[in-house]
Image (cartoon, rainbow, N blue to C red; front, side, top):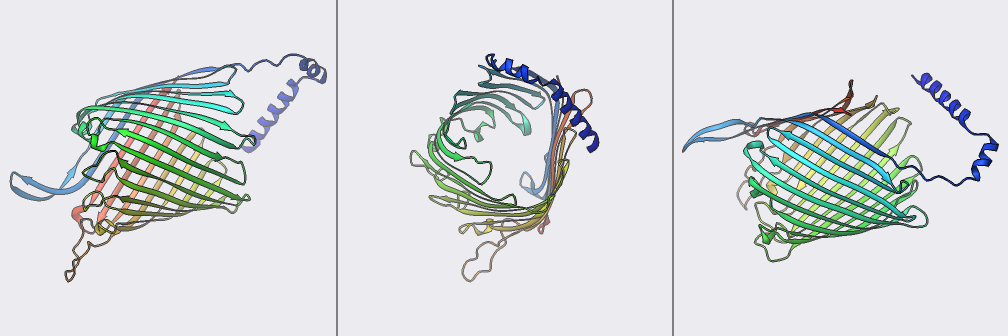
Length: 449
């Protein structure tokens, strides 16, 4: 295969060299004005069908009127089918100074109907300036799991970007807006809202050495059905990455937000601080092997805690993996991972988790497949005990979990393309009445025109 590729490359190079003009033709052409780049436009159509299968199984107490029937296994299977139609228009204008993409995707099924229209418009209107705008509108009717919920969403993002003399440093000013309206059965859990955001950032994107980014955003959200939820939010982000030659890189990340209600609210649901930080190291050893380590921490602090939903917590993730890759056809990544959740006020929710996973990824002949099995053990802390009273078992029992995730994108004969995603998970608890199983499976088969 490598020799045939080399032969084809050499033949293509000879053809290009044969087509090059001689020195006299080059000198003659240099006296002519340079022609403007030709604009292009491409239309893409896809049609097909999709299906989704989901099922969750768990144990719960069963009653008939006032008679207790004991713990019983509950299953919630559901299957959905839909016809899908996708239309896309990509093109350029003004001698390729402007680029645009207009996409519409319609899905009409037995339980879920959805239509989404979005536009992306990029205009390099000056040598150092770029303007980007992306409006989006979506309608959705959801009749899954006994609901009959209608949603209308519209949103828009815009950015104005300025590059500086070195071509690697940028300043950006942005804005975004969102509107959501819902009605029908199930709308009680999805509040209507209007939101607006302004943001700014400064970044350096170098090809080698170091790159960094710092940004700030301010958001206002209004809820017509629940004015006590109206709130303001300040957000920030920072990222720095340093390469130490071709063998090693170090990345530091941090982001967070401060949310506060406009008026005094009965709960602290929308009055909190949230922070996240991460350290990531990547080492490239041999030509086919690399090592990756990441430690990430999150913290959440409410202005006023309670013992039910809104209590402070800290979450830590750690992951270490080795990646083996031969060429671009396939790769294998495997390693341990751990997680710890702690809550000083609600000790029974705290846990330690240790596990491992490996991912097999294949990318060949325009097809992409990924299979990721994982397994681990989660141990909860016992509920806090009163002085002189033994600790009581918590609401959660320790359990072992086994999980596998499959993702795929496979071209087929006849201009067909098959996409699939699925996750299966099994939890085996020390208290068998809390055992649980879940399955989510989705596939999409389309013909490309």
